[in-house]
Length: 480
Image (cartoon, rainbow, N blue to C red; front, side):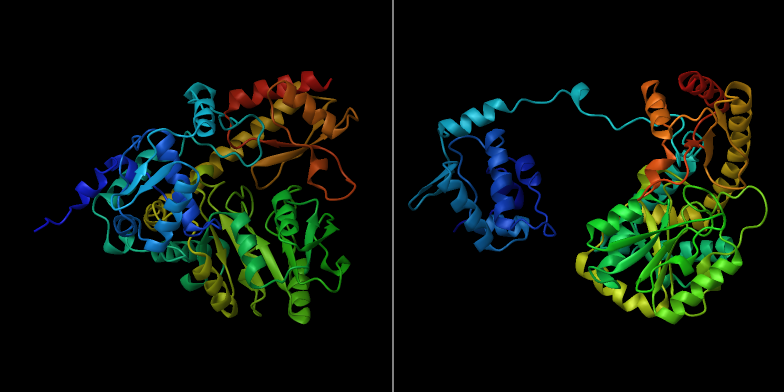
């Protein structure tokens, strides 16, 4: 009688690590059998599967990888057709003892890349807008919460994730928005996303139709315009004035308007109540949507902010989106979308079809971080720090850049708009800044059409006082 083959014995047929390294993505457009064939070729070329070694049966592959035997057979047939493997009647399938010359040449041309030569992400440079202070993040508290969460995880964390997000995190976000932004929202209205890009894509797949016209602010957030354009929508940029977007100047056939009423990006003005009410009235009358980008509303340093647009929406026409990238860590890649009750079913259907795109690993940690009050404490601490750093930036400009740069105080945000007093074109100024290692985006680049205003965006939040002062001196010298 044959003894049943254990899983470990099955894997040892061509190495435990080799089998464990095979990764198939069911969300990928490439068929599973092509993915499996590519993975096996990779292992053969890397000699993780030795020449002449017998491949496991299609049944073992199917059980280990959770695919059908037909998928495995199709993948193995591809290997045989391309000379990577050979079938032996009555014995099974074996890795070719001698690979074809063209395969060997291709494998020899692929050389390991030394770690030092791998491309590195760009370092945060003064004066990068929206760069938060990273050194003062409460890393120790975060680490303790992560250890507590995953040392003995609750059963729900080990199951398939809810594509709408971890329920306790949705509850924590709803509580935060009610307290900080005056938004009357329930946890079921909150959808966890990887950021603004995914949130806009989700709306484009659920409540809008390809070819719809979307009103956007001019100037405005570049990602919004680019995302909607790539999704096949028509964007209608409307120039803002001192009070932000005036909806009466927009096209009558638009299906939605994207606005930053708490603090316009990048100019910084706050939309007054009269404009907000007009915007809500427009959406209600035309049966359209308002997409409120509440991108950095937590950072207000003087005066009490107006509530979020969704907080005064009685008709259910406002959709709000936010992110933790600016208030916590850019690499967190967790954002959220808050939708009216009448859209929950549509959004849920799309999310359940496409699956979760945000890892469940950090969501419960963030939920506890917010629930226990650490997030609110961190925001208050950063408010005090950023207030000081904005003042340092303004004083450095007065000290080092008179006649070159000019700015005025802002009651909120993480950057200032600086005008060029010497008449230099802002794109030329941005290039000169880049040559000396500084990042000072040109305001002109935030316009879809011809710019009606110039200047530089100078972020101050993520840089200590000495760096701000020295960098302004360098910038002023470069612009003279």
